[in-house]
Image (cartoon, rainbow over all chains, first blue to last red; front, side):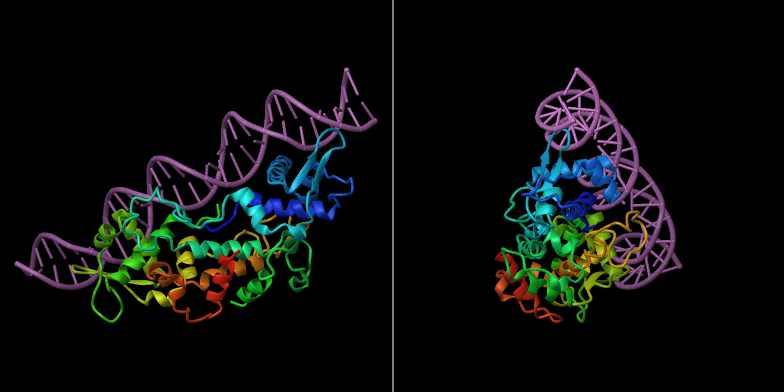
Length: 164
Length: 164
DNA sequence: GCCAAATAGGACCCAAAAGGTCTTGTTTCC
DNA sequence: GGAAACAAGACCTTTTGGGTCCTATTTGGC
């Protein structure tokens, strides 16, 4: 349905809560999975699963043992939304037969749209790379956002497309 | 998985084939569902289903009876990709709790990203509205594309994002 | 007037994927 | 040594999409 998984949505909420609680790199603060579950209203096993995936993606760091917990590895202003989506939903591609894939489609010889989806996928990727998780979580007004670090083209793009 | 349904993919192929066969408004030419199935390699019942949905969306017109068939109602250069996606996948929205939806999420009171997904969805919609079905089907080189009618910003956007 | 061809519309079944929960193991602090 | 918390994986349940089939209706040709 062109929807991303619920876990991705939960992940954004959890990440926002971690930053709100000050569980950032540098200081020693961490936040436990049960604590995040209580704060966000998401079931605790689900929060644990989300944090594990975020840890594997390098977005959070787990501290084991008593008084352990999780902390962010980067401020959310440096985390593009696409990175979270890729961690939970896999590579961003709208169709299977894209990005140079050769096998799998038995109508390849007569398919008139072969390879044509690539710009579409690139457009989606770009749009999602240009929005940081911080932009979803904190500010009250989108025009107050700091521009993301890698691509300064991101913001004008979003602004243009919103006016669709 | 941030994928659109296979039916949407089939729809683009079928639409492209219809235009290729000259089943356009104005002239009397139509193309039958079995004929399209043979030409595209897609199973005939599936093609029939795709055509029914396209007909309900106002993209193709069915002519009943013997020597009947389907024809396009608009040239594909006037059909934004988003229109096809909406017909098969429903409204383009990455999450459930967007666009002013109030009920359904029991953590609404404490959710820090409430309403924040809207610009993201708008960006995706805009990107998909700026690409026509004709752009996916016919040209050999993307820089030869005619600019879509409603929004001339579409092409620069895609070009920028491809360079991500 | 009858038959064949083709769309219209819906119901139905199957398979795959996602969501969520649980269990076990490991680490660290008190 | 015990408790608290993360780490990793297996498992089950539910939902959704994909695909097929059936019946009704319409129209052209004989």
